[in-house]
Each structure stands twice: as structure tokens, then as C-alpha cells.
Length: 86
Image (cartoon, rainbow, N blue to C red; front, side):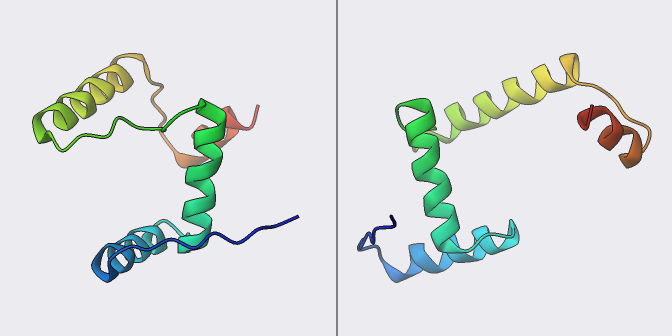
């Protein structure tokens, strides 16, 4: 059974969120559903809320360094797809 959620958010935030989600192939409703499902899966907020740009950048840099160190390298998209479809 589906339910309806009404939220109030300023127009600029809503418009920017819609634009960002659309660039990912999602509509606003799907983005909110995705967020709520992650809250349930992680049993909490699926990100660390902060306005500290240095902390955000440091976290991203750490994740990129880890991915570059431990990630796989593929010569073609087909090679990658074949690997992840195993």
C-alpha cells in the first residue's frame, strides 16, 4: 500500500534537486524514495550532514584514493560489464 508524504521546502531547493536528480535519470519522487530506502537500509541518515567543505573534500579525496588503490581497471566497457555480470 502506498502513502502520500507532504513536505515544505523552498522553491530554489526543490528546483535544484529536480535538476540534479533529472541529470541522474530520476524524478523528485524517485529520489526521495531512494533516500528513504537508504535510511531504512543503513538504519540512519545515509550521509554525514555537514557544511564543512574541508571535511567533505577530505572524505571524497580519501574515497577516491582508496578506489584508485584497490579498484579494478578495465580496458573497455564490455570488459567491465562482463566482470560485474558474473
